[in-house]
Length: 110
Image (cartoon, rainbow, N blue to C red; front, side, top):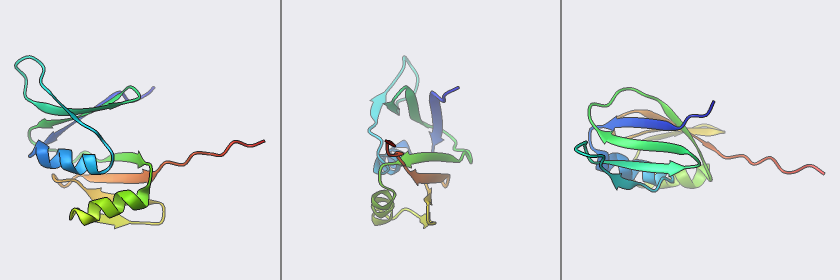
């Protein structure tokens, strides 16, 4: 099984777009028929969408290319980030906890 879609309801999708863009997502604005305008990011068959609406307390986690660079970018922009040795916990604009870990690529063994 592989996760293919995650939709977050956000108080202000522009602020949420800025936060999630900071951790490496490139969004496109979409609207399906008469539905609300929203933002979508797609990579490797996974779609992450930000819709206007009442947020909940969903906790999400992402692997990032560089944990140090991502934490620096978030703190520079004023986001709350708590760092441990192997991960970081950030708060998105709606107060959701976002767990960040660095992508680890196992070297080939000969």
